[in-house]
Structure formats: structure tokens, C-alpha cells
Image (cartoon, rainbow, N blue to C red; front, side):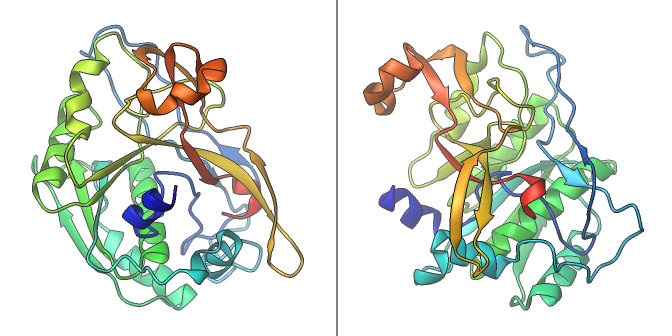
Length: 294
């Protein structure tokens, strides 16, 4: 685990945290859609695993007193005790459709929480895509928290032309060949019988690949089920009145299961009583419950 943390340079863990940028929120949740099982790659579409909270009284950019700030998250997990800031690292965020306002959104977030300016690059390897508000919100979440936890890292947003497997993997390959050292995948979909033939996209020396385990509760998804990625789940984090780490439990919305198609990797051989002969997910988890503030 120490080696993993060092490698990640305190970067954002794929889709484990829910957005509270300029559009701070309170009240109900809305879940990402679940796609039907895909036995064939044709027609497979990924969804962003995003839970967010609506604000029934309108948008209040400065109403952030009831949510966990970057400083609180860093203190809770002990990140503030580490010297690593992401310097020398490039965190690539693989997203569908992109967001035309991501730079200004990030600036708003940084100003709100007193963060330094970010080194951000946006790439469109398949050409400029159409707009999609749901994915734009996911992109804001990923970019802002990657920067919050690794303020000295370069952030590379690689926007795929659509959420198809072809376009997302093209974006994955772009990040791999353009200097990424950490690649975060905040997307996923139903497992399919030929998924293992695509796992090579997540296997390159010197690069850590991460993927969200989903936000629809118990169940497996790909690429989180790939043995070549760090599958990331979500927790409910509770702080004490003094802002210290209080307790943590599995968040009910977090995805998790044994894979339908992927065999148990050697690094899970010590957990056969839990995962059996199949690959189990997630590997690690981070605060993701919108009801705990983030």
C-alpha cells in the first residue's frame, strides 16, 4: 500500500469523491444510469458513476460550510502529513464528450478553497465532441479533486468523442503515449464475455491505471474488473467534531462483486476465501457518499 500511495503521488482516486465545486448542493440524490448486460462489444456504452445533490434553493457558489473541504479530506486521511504534492506526475483523466467550461470551473474551485493555479491540458484525440452536461459534471469532479489532492501534478483531460468503448480506449491510448503516469477512469459498464481482450490497454510499465467500481450498489463492472487496474470503491467517511478521522464504512452505493469473466489475479491469492476463483473488486476505497459532504 505504501508503494501504491507513493506511486499515485496523492492523486485523485477514480470517481471516489462527489463534486462540490462552485455549485454546492444539498438534498436528494440522482444516480447514474445502469446499462444492460453486454455480451457483445457492439453497442456497449460507458456511464459516469456520479452521485450528486441538487440544491432546491438555487445555486449558491459560496455555500460550502456543510461539505468536506480539501483540507478536511487531507487531514482525515493523513495526506497533510506527507511531503508528496504530485510534482513531476501527470494525471490523465479519461472522459467522454469533454467540458467547454472546465478551465473556468477549476479556477472557481481553486479560488473557493485557496488552492494554487493548476497546470491543465485538454486533448481531443478524436476531434471536438458534442456537449453532455452529465459528463461535464463528472469531468469537473475529477479535475477539481485531482488538483486538490495533487496540486503540483499536471492534469491532462483526454476527452473521447463519445462513451463508446472504441472512443474511450482511443483516449486511453492517447494518455498512455503522451506522458501520463497515472490514468483515472471515472466510467464503466456491464461486463462482457470478451472484455479480457481489451485489458492490454491498461498494462504499461510505469503507469498506474485506476477505474471506478460504480455507484449502483453491489455488482461488477468493466474496466474495474480488469486485473490490470486498481479498482476503486466508495465509503462513508465520518469526521469528529474536531475534524479528525472518526469512522468509515462501505457506502451503500459503491459497486463491488466478483467478476463474471476475469479470473482471480495472483495478487488476490490471499483472499480466495472471499473472491474464490474470480477477480474481486474494489481493491481500495475512498470517501464517496454525497451525504457525508463530498
